Structure formats: C-alpha cells, structure tokens
Length: 259
Image (cartoon, rainbow, N blue to C red; front, side, top):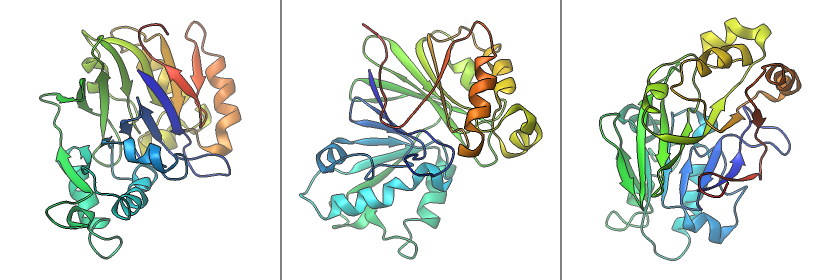
C-alpha cells in the first residue's frame, strides 16, 4: 500500500490540514482536507471515503469534493462509509439542503455523486481488493477506527480520534499490521483534558501500546494540536524502544511488501 498524508494536524494552521489519509489514490481515511491537497484528476480517483466520526475537522473536505464532482463529467458516485450513527449525523446536519446541498440527489436522484454506506464491526467490507474492518473507539461522539488489509495481507490501522480504548487493539489480532496511524492530541500535562475530550497524550499512548497483540513496524502519530506539537514531539522521543514518527502533510509512506 502507498499512503499519502493529505492532512494530519489536530487543528487548522498555515500549512497544516486536518486528518485525511489516502491509500493507493482511491481509498480515503477521513476527509479533513481533499480539494486543498489534491488536484482535479487526483480528486476524481477517490472512490470510497471511510469516516471515523462526524466532527467537522474529519469531514469538511467532503462537501467541496462533491461540489467539484457535480460540476464535472458524469462518474460513479463516491461512497462515504461509516457506522450508522455517523452517517445519520452527516445526513442530518450537513447534506440537508440547508448547510449544504443534498448531493445524494445531485445531479439527479438516479445518478448522484454521493452515496452513503454503513459498516459494522461484525463483518468487513471488501472493496477493490481491500478488506476493511471497523472497530469502535473511545471518543466523545460515536467513533470508529479501521483496519485496512491489502491483497498481500499487509494491513494499516487508523484509530481516528480516541482516548484509551480496547476494541481496535483486539481487532489487530491475527492480522499483519505493518503500520498504525494513531492520534496524540495533547501533552502529558493535559492528561485530564485529553481523557475528558476522548484523546491521547504520549503517556497515554504508551499504555495503549501495551494492550496491542504486537507492536506494528511503523507507529505514525497524527492529530497533535499545533500549540503543543513541540512538547508532544519531546515527550514521544522520551519513550524508549518504540520508534514513532509524527506525520506531516504531503508525506508519502510505503506500507507492506518492499517497505
């Protein structure tokens, strides 16, 4: 798998976009940015978007992508996939013809540019040769993490926003997880705020790693709040024996065979 980091920040700042991780040009994990990070042709290659939850910083690229698609040549619809609670919130509060047009009916109800699809932790979706598994994570709203496995059996896990959790680590059992994309939003001194808001600190992440059936080869850190990024970097570097890398927009990472 080839992973491109479109956005990895915990908030918007100059040169920093919010969460969006593109796999092999076609599968997008979260959609904090799309049109600001990809040219027209690259946008049109995206076929499926997996959302972790309905917070604005993880979905705000979708409305503008739909607008671009609707103004272009006819194509198959982009499928936006998540748990039923997440899909319900996006339908109700975004694509409601008040905040934004209902693109499940544009350009026409017969040929829309947007479709929604629900996923559950009970069974994976098989899409374009990938198997995608969902697992609930611990955030302040209903939220899901994902394990994406390619045809070689190599897998990447993405937690989205989550405080201390359980199910996503259990989901890793029996899979060859080559990379983990995991959030660290706050510094250690803000542990109480992190727990209350459903996020991690470096110290909390260290405890989560102990729950994993095996430590992935790559641990990729996303979602640091820009104001605390330098402190988070220092605190992560102090964790011995577990190499981690804080992601930056525009990075390209090979996951699996030949990495």
